Image (cartoon, rainbow, N blue to C red):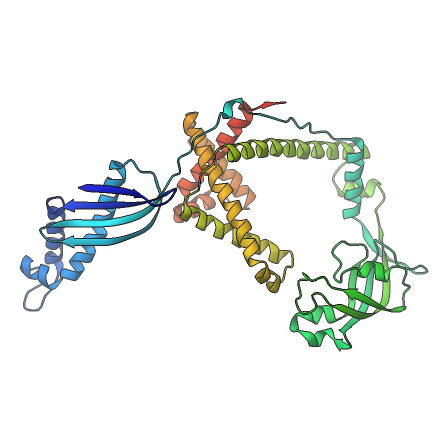
Length: 432
């Protein structure tokens, strides 16, 4: 067998494999005999046709089966002989089998990048103290009261920031109702008994809160609303609309008192116990943020000091995954299809950059794991799966079965090893 490797990109190679007939003849003959033993050809009983007749009549099938058998076999041998580290097979072409001459093919593959590690053992990062103040605790208590707040109807005063108001509204542009401009303007055009929170940063109509401030129940106002050029409904982007708004009700936010009923509702016996729990949760969150800051500094150092191009096939796959995840998140946040189309290129570029960092970080951590002789025990991997399963509200057994069915178990093991490696780096890294 002869092999030849050509570098056609930072991580892309073509692998040319040529095999002499003497190396494939035995397997080829076995394949022909296998066909002859089961095939039924005209004029012959099943399994009784001469081998040469079978070979002649079923030449195309034999050729296809031989290729399917020989390509994987000699690919593995060639990769080992050339000491390649393939991460993906991009394509296989120029496959040929010539009787009495030999077999050959060309594989285009992506290989693991060359990672020249920096001096990571002497890395030091800024120490972040997880500080929790009494003001933080008080803010957490007030936030809890806010989450348990109720809204009560009020009369005898005008509406103000923080109120929940019920309104009817209708809008037009240059005298034409918004609902007639475009189907996407239906919700913007008019509404009945619509509930709006005054003072929210994300008003359903830009700046509507300040336009309604000071209104009384039963009052009607005519207000003008300007839409930015990048507004997510193209039909009104860059235009000014006139709205007629009638205020029908005002509800005021009422915080529950810090009494026995509230304490019982949240499962504590005293205000002091509530404050201690809030302090503990805040400190845990602060410690987590401090750890994430350290992890981020380590990752930034490694990415900056270890330049290399990620394998293109992995980058394309990861970019698609990041893109899909980003779009789904934006849809959940209410971003319209029109806005997604408008920002498609921007989202695509950002997804590719994020994917490149993820892939590069993975190869860097795997290289450090090799350098430090780190290995993953079965117990550590089981703990990793259990953690993922809990996060995904699955059982570890179900998640493991899903990974196995998608042939992603090895990838999950690498994820766990990368996590272990980062934790080891955290232990090795000095703080300043």
